[in-house]
Length: 393
Ligand SMILES: [Zn+2]
Ligand SMILES: [Zn+2]
Image (cartoon, rainbow, N blue to C red; front, side, top):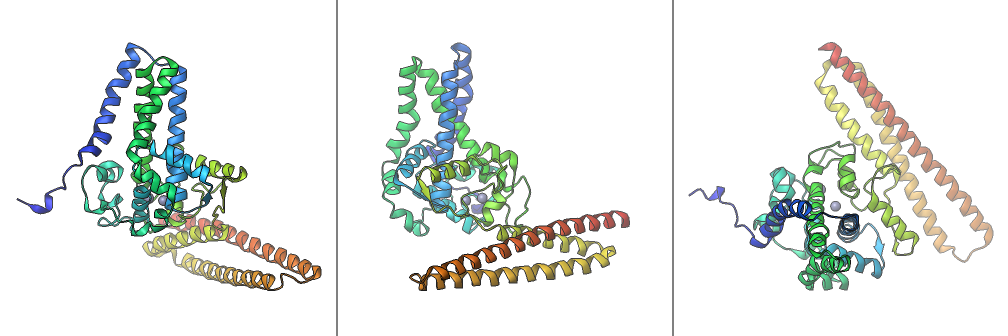
Protein backbone atom coordinates (compact mmCIF):
# COMPACT_ATOMS: atom_id res chain seq x y z
CA UNK A 1 0.00 0.00 0.00
CA UNK A 2 1.31 3.42 -0.86
CA UNK A 3 0.69 5.56 2.20
CA UNK A 4 1.55 8.87 0.49
CA UNK A 5 -1.39 8.38 -1.88
CA UNK A 6 -3.88 7.67 0.89
CA UNK A 7 -6.30 10.56 1.25
CA UNK A 8 -7.77 11.47 4.62
CA UNK A 9 -11.29 10.10 5.26
CA UNK A 10 -14.35 11.86 3.87
CA UNK A 11 -16.44 13.96 6.27
CA UNK A 12 -20.02 12.63 5.87
CA UNK A 13 -21.82 15.80 6.99
CA UNK A 14 -19.76 17.97 4.66
CA UNK A 15 -20.28 15.56 1.77
CA UNK A 16 -24.03 15.76 2.42
CA UNK A 17 -23.94 19.56 2.45
CA UNK A 18 -21.60 20.16 -0.47
CA UNK A 19 -22.37 17.20 -2.74
CA UNK A 20 -25.85 15.87 -1.95
CA UNK A 21 -27.55 19.28 -1.61
CA UNK A 22 -26.35 20.63 -4.99
CA UNK A 23 -27.40 17.36 -6.69
CA UNK A 24 -30.79 17.60 -5.01
CA UNK A 25 -31.10 21.21 -6.18
CA UNK A 26 -30.17 20.21 -9.71
CA UNK A 27 -33.00 17.67 -9.85
CA UNK A 28 -35.72 19.03 -7.57
CA UNK A 29 -35.70 22.74 -8.46
CA UNK A 30 -36.37 22.25 -12.21
CA UNK A 31 -38.77 19.35 -11.50
CA UNK A 32 -40.95 21.51 -9.26
CA UNK A 33 -40.66 24.31 -11.80
CA UNK A 34 -42.12 22.08 -14.51
CA UNK A 35 -44.72 20.48 -12.28
CA UNK A 36 -45.90 23.55 -10.41
CA UNK A 37 -43.90 26.65 -11.39
CA UNK A 38 -42.47 29.53 -9.36
CA UNK A 39 -43.65 33.13 -9.15
CA UNK A 40 -41.97 36.52 -8.80
CA UNK A 41 -42.49 36.56 -5.01
CA UNK A 42 -40.36 33.44 -4.63
CA UNK A 43 -37.63 34.59 -7.03
CA UNK A 44 -37.39 37.97 -5.33
CA UNK A 45 -37.15 36.45 -1.87
CA UNK A 46 -34.49 34.02 -3.09
CA UNK A 47 -32.50 36.98 -4.42
CA UNK A 48 -32.98 38.91 -1.16
CA UNK A 49 -31.79 35.93 0.89
CA UNK A 50 -28.84 35.48 -1.47
CA UNK A 51 -27.65 39.02 -0.81
CA UNK A 52 -28.41 38.94 2.92
CA UNK A 53 -26.36 35.75 3.31
CA UNK A 54 -23.63 36.72 0.88
CA UNK A 55 -23.02 40.18 2.30
CA UNK A 56 -23.05 38.86 5.87
CA UNK A 57 -20.16 36.63 4.87
CA UNK A 58 -18.25 39.35 2.98
CA UNK A 59 -19.11 42.34 5.19
CA UNK A 60 -19.32 40.45 8.49
CA UNK A 61 -17.35 37.19 8.58
CA UNK A 62 -14.68 38.45 6.21
CA UNK A 63 -14.04 42.18 6.42
CA UNK A 64 -15.27 42.78 9.98
CA UNK A 65 -14.29 39.67 11.93
CA UNK A 66 -11.43 38.10 9.97
CA UNK A 67 -9.71 41.39 9.06
CA UNK A 68 -10.99 44.06 11.50
CA UNK A 69 -11.34 46.50 8.61
CA UNK A 70 -13.83 48.53 10.68
CA UNK A 71 -15.84 48.44 13.88
CA UNK A 72 -19.52 47.54 13.97
CA UNK A 73 -22.26 48.27 16.49
CA UNK A 74 -23.87 45.30 18.30
CA UNK A 75 -27.01 45.63 16.13
CA UNK A 76 -24.98 45.18 12.95
CA UNK A 77 -22.97 42.33 14.46
CA UNK A 78 -26.18 40.48 15.42
CA UNK A 79 -27.48 40.99 11.91
CA UNK A 80 -24.30 39.46 10.45
CA UNK A 81 -24.31 36.61 12.99
CA UNK A 82 -27.83 35.49 11.99
CA UNK A 83 -27.66 35.97 8.23
CA UNK A 84 -24.09 34.68 8.13
CA UNK A 85 -25.22 31.48 9.88
CA UNK A 86 -27.80 31.20 7.07
CA UNK A 87 -24.96 30.93 4.54
CA UNK A 88 -24.00 27.55 6.04
CA UNK A 89 -20.25 28.13 5.94
CA UNK A 90 -19.53 27.32 9.57
CA UNK A 91 -19.48 29.69 12.55
CA UNK A 92 -17.75 33.08 12.51
CA UNK A 93 -15.03 31.77 14.84
CA UNK A 94 -14.05 28.82 12.65
CA UNK A 95 -14.45 30.70 9.36
CA UNK A 96 -12.42 33.73 10.42
CA UNK A 97 -9.68 31.62 12.02
CA UNK A 98 -9.33 29.53 8.82
CA UNK A 99 -9.28 32.69 6.76
CA UNK A 100 -6.58 34.36 8.82
CA UNK A 101 -4.48 31.25 8.27
CA UNK A 102 -5.17 31.50 4.54
CA UNK A 103 -3.74 35.03 4.48
CA UNK A 104 -0.80 34.29 6.70
CA UNK A 105 0.28 31.19 4.79
CA UNK A 106 -1.19 31.94 1.37
CA UNK A 107 -0.24 29.30 -1.26
CA UNK A 108 1.54 27.17 1.35
CA UNK A 109 0.17 23.68 0.68
CA UNK A 110 0.84 22.52 4.24
CA UNK A 111 -0.69 25.40 6.15
CA UNK A 112 -3.07 27.38 3.93
CA UNK A 113 -6.39 25.51 4.43
CA UNK A 114 -7.50 26.25 0.85
CA UNK A 115 -4.16 26.68 -0.87
CA UNK A 116 -4.50 27.38 -4.60
CA UNK A 117 -1.31 25.37 -5.09
CA UNK A 118 -3.30 22.19 -4.48
CA UNK A 119 -5.49 22.79 -7.50
CA UNK A 120 -8.72 24.49 -8.52
CA UNK A 121 -11.00 21.76 -7.20
CA UNK A 122 -9.25 21.56 -3.84
CA UNK A 123 -9.34 25.33 -3.27
CA UNK A 124 -12.98 25.54 -4.41
CA UNK A 125 -14.49 22.86 -2.18
CA UNK A 126 -12.28 19.77 -2.07
CA UNK A 127 -10.65 21.10 1.07
CA UNK A 128 -13.94 20.80 2.99
CA UNK A 129 -14.81 17.26 1.97
CA UNK A 130 -12.02 15.42 3.76
CA UNK A 131 -10.41 15.58 7.14
CA UNK A 132 -7.24 17.33 5.94
CA UNK A 133 -4.51 18.19 8.40
CA UNK A 134 -4.50 21.82 7.20
CA UNK A 135 -8.09 22.07 8.52
CA UNK A 136 -7.24 21.34 12.14
CA UNK A 137 -8.93 23.92 14.36
CA UNK A 138 -6.46 26.24 16.04
CA UNK A 139 -7.91 29.39 17.53
CA UNK A 140 -4.62 30.82 18.71
CA UNK A 141 -5.02 33.35 15.88
CA UNK A 142 -8.53 34.32 17.00
CA UNK A 143 -8.24 35.22 20.66
CA UNK A 144 -9.86 38.59 19.97
CA UNK A 145 -12.88 36.84 18.45
CA UNK A 146 -13.17 34.56 21.45
CA UNK A 147 -13.72 37.70 23.53
CA UNK A 148 -16.65 38.80 21.35
CA UNK A 149 -19.82 37.50 23.06
CA UNK A 150 -21.82 37.59 19.81
CA UNK A 151 -19.21 35.44 18.05
CA UNK A 152 -19.18 32.91 20.90
CA UNK A 153 -22.97 32.81 21.16
CA UNK A 154 -23.26 32.15 17.43
CA UNK A 155 -20.62 29.41 17.63
CA UNK A 156 -22.46 27.71 20.48
CA UNK A 157 -25.91 27.75 18.85
CA UNK A 158 -24.70 27.37 15.29
CA UNK A 159 -26.60 24.22 14.30
CA UNK A 160 -29.95 25.49 15.56
CA UNK A 161 -29.35 28.90 13.98
CA UNK A 162 -28.38 27.64 10.56
CA UNK A 163 -31.29 25.16 10.53
CA UNK A 164 -33.73 27.95 11.36
CA UNK A 165 -32.28 30.35 8.77
CA UNK A 166 -32.14 27.74 5.98
CA UNK A 167 -35.27 25.73 6.66
CA UNK A 168 -37.40 27.47 9.30
CA UNK A 169 -37.54 30.87 7.63
CA UNK A 170 -38.29 29.55 4.11
CA UNK A 171 -41.06 27.34 5.58
CA UNK A 172 -42.60 30.37 7.32
CA UNK A 173 -42.29 32.37 4.11
CA UNK A 174 -43.93 29.50 2.18
CA UNK A 175 -46.77 29.29 4.72
CA UNK A 176 -47.43 32.99 4.25
CA UNK A 177 -47.24 32.65 0.49
CA UNK A 178 -49.26 29.42 0.21
CA UNK A 179 -46.55 27.25 -1.41
CA UNK A 180 -44.21 25.68 1.12
CA UNK A 181 -42.41 23.24 -1.19
CA UNK A 182 -41.68 25.77 -3.93
CA UNK A 183 -40.50 28.43 -1.47
CA UNK A 184 -38.25 25.98 0.40
CA UNK A 185 -36.75 24.78 -2.89
CA UNK A 186 -36.03 28.28 -4.23
CA UNK A 187 -35.38 30.43 -1.15
CA UNK A 188 -33.94 27.57 0.89
CA UNK A 189 -32.12 25.14 -1.37
CA UNK A 190 -31.25 26.88 -4.64
CA UNK A 191 -30.23 30.12 -2.91
CA UNK A 192 -27.99 28.17 -0.51
CA UNK A 193 -26.20 26.27 -3.27
CA UNK A 194 -25.71 29.37 -5.44
CA UNK A 195 -24.33 31.36 -2.53
CA UNK A 196 -21.98 28.53 -1.62
CA UNK A 197 -20.40 28.41 -5.04
CA UNK A 198 -20.09 32.15 -5.62
CA UNK A 199 -18.35 32.48 -2.25
CA UNK A 200 -16.06 29.54 -3.05
CA UNK A 201 -15.04 31.27 -6.29
CA UNK A 202 -13.05 33.69 -4.14
CA UNK A 203 -10.79 30.87 -2.94
CA UNK A 204 -10.61 29.09 -6.27
CA UNK A 205 -11.02 31.27 -9.39
CA UNK A 206 -9.84 34.49 -7.73
CA UNK A 207 -6.48 32.76 -7.21
CA UNK A 208 -6.20 31.67 -10.86
CA UNK A 209 -7.93 34.04 -13.22
CA UNK A 210 -7.26 37.77 -13.51
CA UNK A 211 -4.53 40.37 -13.20
CA UNK A 212 -1.93 41.08 -10.54
CA UNK A 213 -1.43 44.87 -10.45
CA UNK A 214 -0.42 45.19 -6.78
CA UNK A 215 1.77 42.19 -6.05
CA UNK A 216 3.06 39.06 -7.73
CA UNK A 217 4.20 37.52 -4.48
CA UNK A 218 1.06 35.36 -4.24
CA UNK A 219 -1.52 33.80 -6.54
CA UNK A 220 -4.43 36.18 -5.78
CA UNK A 221 -5.93 38.01 -8.80
CA UNK A 222 -8.10 41.02 -9.53
CA UNK A 223 -11.11 40.14 -11.64
CA UNK A 224 -14.03 42.50 -12.27
CA UNK A 225 -16.33 39.74 -13.49
CA UNK A 226 -15.75 37.68 -10.34
CA UNK A 227 -16.32 40.83 -8.27
CA UNK A 228 -19.79 41.04 -9.77
CA UNK A 229 -20.57 37.47 -8.67
CA UNK A 230 -18.94 37.70 -5.25
CA UNK A 231 -20.45 40.88 -3.76
CA UNK A 232 -17.25 42.78 -4.56
CA UNK A 233 -14.62 40.30 -3.41
CA UNK A 234 -13.15 39.73 -6.87
CA UNK A 235 -10.45 42.36 -6.37
CA UNK A 236 -8.51 39.71 -4.58
CA UNK A 237 -4.98 40.78 -5.54
CA UNK A 238 -5.60 44.14 -3.85
CA UNK A 239 -7.18 42.39 -0.91
CA UNK A 240 -4.23 40.08 -0.30
CA UNK A 241 -1.76 42.95 -0.09
CA UNK A 242 -3.99 45.39 1.85
CA UNK A 243 -6.23 43.05 3.82
CA UNK A 244 -7.28 45.57 6.48
CA UNK A 245 -8.87 47.95 3.94
CA UNK A 246 -12.67 47.80 4.23
CA UNK A 247 -12.79 48.11 0.43
CA UNK A 248 -11.74 45.48 -2.10
CA UNK A 249 -12.61 47.51 -5.17
CA UNK A 250 -10.93 50.82 -4.30
CA UNK A 251 -12.10 52.89 -7.28
CA UNK A 252 -15.58 54.39 -7.03
CA UNK A 253 -16.65 52.60 -10.21
CA UNK A 254 -15.43 49.16 -9.17
CA UNK A 255 -18.31 46.83 -8.28
CA UNK A 256 -18.08 46.31 -4.54
CA UNK A 257 -21.55 46.30 -2.91
CA UNK A 258 -19.98 45.19 0.36
CA UNK A 259 -17.92 48.40 0.51
CA UNK A 260 -21.04 50.47 -0.31
CA UNK A 261 -23.00 48.69 2.39
CA UNK A 262 -20.30 49.29 5.01
CA UNK A 263 -20.04 52.97 4.17
CA UNK A 264 -23.86 53.26 4.30
CA UNK A 265 -23.71 51.68 7.76
CA UNK A 266 -21.13 54.31 8.72
CA UNK A 267 -23.55 57.07 7.70
CA UNK A 268 -26.30 55.41 9.76
CA UNK A 269 -24.01 55.25 12.79
CA UNK A 270 -23.75 51.44 12.72
CA UNK A 271 -20.10 51.24 11.63
CA UNK A 272 -17.03 53.29 12.51
CA UNK A 273 -13.25 53.54 12.11
CA UNK A 274 -13.26 52.28 8.52
CA UNK A 275 -9.69 51.54 7.41
CA UNK A 276 -8.64 53.07 4.10
CA UNK A 277 -5.09 52.43 2.90
CA UNK A 278 -3.52 55.78 1.83
CA UNK A 279 -3.45 56.31 -1.90
CA UNK A 280 0.32 56.75 -1.86
CA UNK A 281 0.85 53.24 -0.53
CA UNK A 282 -1.43 51.85 -3.22
CA UNK A 283 0.43 53.72 -5.99
CA UNK A 284 3.68 52.53 -4.52
CA UNK A 285 2.59 48.89 -4.65
CA UNK A 286 1.54 49.24 -8.30
CA UNK A 287 4.85 50.87 -9.24
CA UNK A 288 6.85 48.32 -7.32
CA UNK A 289 5.16 45.55 -9.29
CA UNK A 290 5.69 47.43 -12.55
CA UNK A 291 9.41 47.86 -11.87
CA UNK A 292 9.76 44.18 -11.07
CA UNK A 293 8.03 43.22 -14.29
CA UNK A 294 10.02 45.73 -16.36
CA UNK A 295 13.33 44.44 -14.98
CA UNK A 296 12.35 40.89 -15.80
CA UNK A 297 11.43 41.81 -19.38
CA UNK A 298 14.62 43.82 -19.83
CA UNK A 299 16.71 40.89 -18.67
CA UNK A 300 15.12 38.83 -21.40
CA UNK A 301 15.78 41.35 -24.19
CA UNK A 302 19.43 42.33 -24.58
CA UNK A 303 18.44 44.80 -27.34
CA UNK A 304 16.97 47.17 -24.79
CA UNK A 305 20.22 48.43 -23.25
CA UNK A 306 19.27 52.12 -23.51
CA UNK A 307 15.92 51.53 -21.89
CA UNK A 308 17.55 49.83 -18.94
CA UNK A 309 19.28 53.11 -18.00
CA UNK A 310 15.97 54.99 -18.23
CA UNK A 311 14.31 52.43 -16.03
CA UNK A 312 17.03 52.68 -13.39
CA UNK A 313 16.67 56.51 -13.41
CA UNK A 314 12.92 56.12 -12.88
CA UNK A 315 13.61 53.72 -10.05
CA UNK A 316 15.92 56.29 -8.44
CA UNK A 317 13.11 58.87 -8.59
CA UNK A 318 10.71 56.34 -7.13
CA UNK A 319 12.98 55.70 -4.15
CA UNK A 320 13.32 59.45 -3.59
CA UNK A 321 9.54 59.90 -3.60
CA UNK A 322 9.18 57.17 -1.03
CA UNK A 323 11.79 58.73 1.22
CA UNK A 324 10.06 62.10 0.97
CA UNK A 325 6.79 60.48 1.84
CA UNK A 326 8.27 58.81 4.92
CA UNK A 327 9.75 62.17 5.94
CA UNK A 328 6.33 63.83 5.61
CA UNK A 329 4.73 61.05 7.62
CA UNK A 330 7.12 61.62 10.50
CA UNK A 331 6.51 65.39 10.30
CA UNK A 332 2.79 64.79 10.52
CA UNK A 333 3.29 62.52 13.49
CA UNK A 334 5.44 65.18 15.18
CA UNK A 335 2.76 67.82 14.58
CA UNK A 336 0.08 65.65 16.06
CA UNK A 337 2.18 65.08 19.16
CA UNK A 338 2.86 68.79 19.54
CA UNK A 339 -0.80 69.56 19.09
CA UNK A 340 -1.62 67.20 21.93
CA UNK A 341 0.98 68.78 24.19
CA UNK A 342 -0.32 72.29 23.47
CA UNK A 343 -3.94 71.30 23.72
CA UNK A 344 -4.67 74.24 25.98
CA UNK A 345 -2.77 76.91 24.05
CA UNK A 346 -4.17 79.98 22.30
CA UNK A 347 -6.14 80.35 19.17
CA UNK A 348 -3.24 81.85 17.26
CA UNK A 349 -1.31 78.66 17.64
CA UNK A 350 -4.28 76.65 16.44
CA UNK A 351 -4.46 78.77 13.31
CA UNK A 352 -0.77 78.24 12.67
CA UNK A 353 -1.31 74.50 13.05
CA UNK A 354 -4.20 74.52 10.64
CA UNK A 355 -2.03 76.25 8.08
CA UNK A 356 0.80 73.76 8.64
CA UNK A 357 -1.60 70.88 8.23
CA UNK A 358 -2.92 72.28 4.97
CA UNK A 359 0.64 72.73 3.68
CA UNK A 360 1.46 69.14 4.62
CA UNK A 361 -1.66 67.88 2.90
CA UNK A 362 -0.72 69.72 -0.27
CA UNK A 363 2.73 68.17 -0.26
CA UNK A 364 1.21 64.71 0.26
CA UNK A 365 -1.05 65.27 -2.68
CA UNK A 366 1.84 66.46 -4.84
CA UNK A 367 3.76 63.31 -4.02
CA UNK A 368 0.77 61.11 -4.83
CA UNK A 369 0.40 62.90 -8.13
CA UNK A 370 4.07 62.48 -9.02
CA UNK A 371 3.82 58.73 -8.39
CA UNK A 372 0.77 58.55 -10.62
CA UNK A 373 2.68 60.31 -13.41
CA UNK A 374 5.63 58.02 -12.92
CA UNK A 375 3.35 55.02 -13.23
CA UNK A 376 2.30 56.27 -16.65
CA UNK A 377 5.93 56.80 -17.72
CA UNK A 378 6.94 53.31 -16.63
CA UNK A 379 3.96 51.83 -18.50
CA UNK A 380 5.11 53.70 -21.60
CA UNK A 381 8.63 52.43 -21.11
CA UNK A 382 7.30 48.90 -20.95
CA UNK A 383 5.57 49.38 -24.29
CA UNK A 384 8.89 50.45 -25.78
CA UNK A 385 10.61 47.39 -24.34
CA UNK A 386 8.00 45.11 -25.85
CA UNK A 387 8.22 46.92 -29.17
CA UNK A 388 12.01 46.54 -29.28
CA UNK A 389 11.72 42.90 -28.33
CA UNK A 390 9.23 42.37 -31.16
CA UNK A 391 11.52 44.12 -33.64
CA UNK A 392 14.55 42.13 -32.51
CA UNK A 393 12.66 38.88 -32.95
ZN1 LIG B 1 -7.31 34.49 -1.02
ZN1 LIG C 1 -9.38 38.06 3.36
